[in-house]
Length: 398
Image (tube, rainbow, N blue to C red; front, side, top):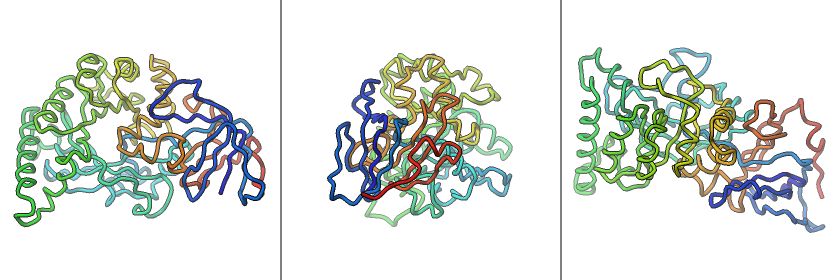
């Protein structure tokens, strides 16, 4: 067992988001899971346990990136390391992110160093249907050992990217109508397959749609513009599907309407250039306006569009632009876990959840805050040597 004592604990529980929920106390970890979180925990004298004195530093659940392409679009490798988009056909639901994620990508170390312990990773937005996202942990060599949930969502894309990428090939789609039409056609065929499933030969292409149609995972919709956001919602409702509104760059312009619909938004990357017409209204204000309207939101870097290690900074800039401080922290912890469908294991410091946590010397959304230690499954995967003295120099066995 491992006991973290004298910690300023930020539980980030799903049912509460008040600052006063923070308290000084201890966290007991066993077999990679959180066993107890308490302000008044006393370890029995006979217990064999490693003890770390956190010395009143801030302990948060590991941060979560809710939408990125880390390990699929690798840093430092150019074309050879880019497996993000299968641009030979606009409909590719059978693609699985786990078959392309290279855990040796340098971005994984940067993520761990920033206190990010999990990420939702998947294909890009060049295709109308891109394939299956997965939620994985950020430290390890073998992808199979890092999977938290796969598939976790089905990527679909609206707007400029599919239009531009298939126009040169002279195949549909070349308009927004074409994108919506192809997606409806695909979903109709997938529904027909599901209705006949068990009576016909298995089809690998349409098997990928089964968890979506059964409501187990959502559509993960790449949407920036107002019209694309509404089209994604329209199609999701037509086929009775859940959907996350990823990027949602003009969401602040229609916040009241989105609040009525009730779908969550993954906002960003706002720490990036407005290099396309459809992101001309992108702003850090979006997250705050949506959250203040009652919409569940998470923050994304969309790595490598913005670097993965800027995730807490992006949340901080959203706070500066109007997002409440506690909501900024929730957007990269429990809210992200809930939107990604993994809040049963991640996103908060509670008994029974994975012992994935990060220790900071301040608020992680502030630029000068240091990550002191990152832990995944109860094991230290990063320790800041420059600030080692801020934690107990040695663990002791009691």
